[in-house]
Length: 242
Image (tube, rainbow, N blue to C red; front, side, top):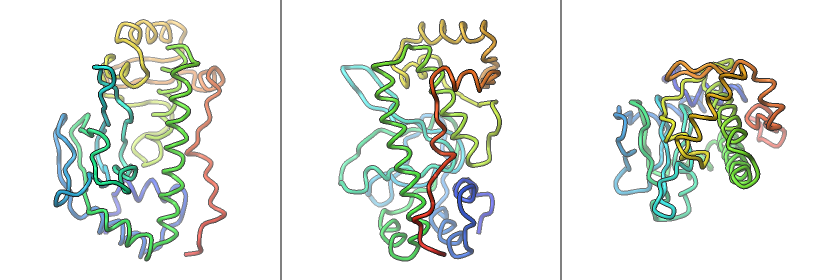
């Protein structure tokens, strides 16, 4: 069992995992592949791309109106590919944003998880639901928030997610993305991202030391955009007993 697993670290923030549950996760992560920035996440035997991102960042990209959009940023401890479970298609182009480790597995392992580990499956389902809620909020923000507010919301979201697997804490965020790539996430040009970041720096809300961004006034930023950390308050009352 690999106790350094980011998925284990993330899930134990919510539940005290049993030894059997930890062993199941270790089995999911046994095919570990080190990938370089820009590499596509691998598939297993022609199946959909599904697996655990254990180290580094990855991004899902799509083309819309001839422009590239980053639809999701995956952080260590994320399970990639759950949205594609019900289809036989590639729903998104997922590539490494940094060097890192990805552990692919066949989707049949999810079926086994549902049968053998209902509590663990329920936790992954709950986290997946939060991810869908977060996506809906970001889509709503794209049409109602200013570019500054969208950037603040994105920085707060990344900070809260990076804290979960134990690789980040507090308000210092490692974000190895260009201003253009950040713009692809929030729906803004690189010029707008640059100008907005400078505004936040002058206000004393953030400090930029590439690739790190420090949130100096996190409470003020949360109040400004009415940010809710969805990952910090999961309802676990309906989970099966271990």
